[in-house]
Structures are given as structure tokens and as C-alpha cells.
Length: 256
Image (cartoon, rainbow, N blue to C red; front, side):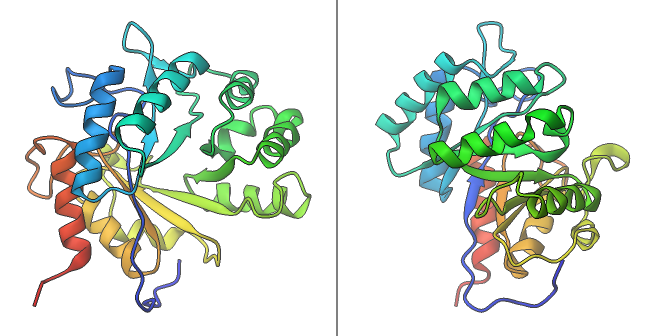
């Protein structure tokens, strides 16, 4: 990834407050219910987040792609924080297959969705349907890439027209499969350069350092309890908004 510093780049801040796997046992302030998600989104928006990466849960608190639960939560978010963008996840999380992911996109018709190239590749015969549907219904796609092999796979699908023109945004996931799942800023160097819009998320106590490096190189950032519960000294953030606020301060740099 390019190390050239951009001019006047203000990074977009996307908060990922819960993810698919963590719950209250991991952090009491991790949002699970619809109301908890809405309340967290409000505080994160006030702290400086531009959008939310939305995961919803079923009645048992487990990861869900249920369209009804998504639509209910999105309606509440639009009422409570109308200026906040909403990106839904289609994450499989070891539960959902590609037909279920496609069905979710069909039923929810979101403005914005994150889609893992690696997950869709489990059913290559459905890839054209997934990206074609998003193009037809106006769903903006953010491709989730875990390594440069995923980026190469995406490039192949783009060249073949499976991924449509304009579907170029990507999320670079740093250190997902490293020892202890601790990301480092240099993990960004493992990805190829791109002129497309790109965003970074990172795991562990160096999350903010990784995101600052990404922003300095012209990328956008995703922050929150999905990826990291702790600050650089290893102590837990009070809540998602505290992490967002601290990151925004880091991105702004020292005030004169």
C-alpha cells in the first residue's frame, strides 16, 4: 500500500460496535439488542463517527442476517441518528452460506453493504448474482479483503465483469490471522496499491496506531468493539464512543 502522504485527507470514520461473535461477557457496554445498538450509535455519532457497520442479533444474542431484524434496527437508527450512514454486514460467521447472504441482500435492499470476497468464493456460481443484484438495486459494495490473495481474487472478478464497474471500495483487514490476533501498522504493507476508496480495520491494542497509519496514507478507518476492546496500554475502553473519541483526537493531531 502506498506510503505517499495525501494532501488534506479527512478520513471517514465507520464504527463497528459489536461484530458477530462478542457479547456482554466480553464487555458490558458491547451492544446486542436493538436499543443498545441505537444508543451506542447515537453516542458514537456525537463522538465523531460518520457511519455504523451494522450487525444484528437474534433473540438469543447470536449473529443474524434476518431481514426483519435488520429493517427494524435500520428504521430505529434512521429515526434516532438520521445523519449517520448505515452499512450492513453479510458476514457468514461460520453460520450462513452464500444463498443466505444473497437472500439477505435481496430482502433488505440496503444502501451499503460489506461483502467478503473470500466468503462469496465459496459458491462461485452465485457470485454474478450477488454483485449483479447490488448493482441493480443500488447497494454500494465494500469488499472485505483479508490479504493480498483476496485482492488478487477481486481483481480477477473485476476483469471478468463479475464484480461490476464502480464496485471498487475495499476494507483491508489487518492481522486477522496473526498470532494472538494483534495487528501492526506494517501489516498494511502486505496489500497492493489501489486508486480505489479503501478503509482499514485492525485488531488488538494497536488498533488506533494502525488506523492512524492508514489515514496518513489516504485511507478511511473502521473502529470499534468488533475488532478491539482495548487501548494501547491494554486497558479496556469504557465504551465504543470512548474509542471513537480517542481515535478522532489522534487523527486530528496536536491542536495549536
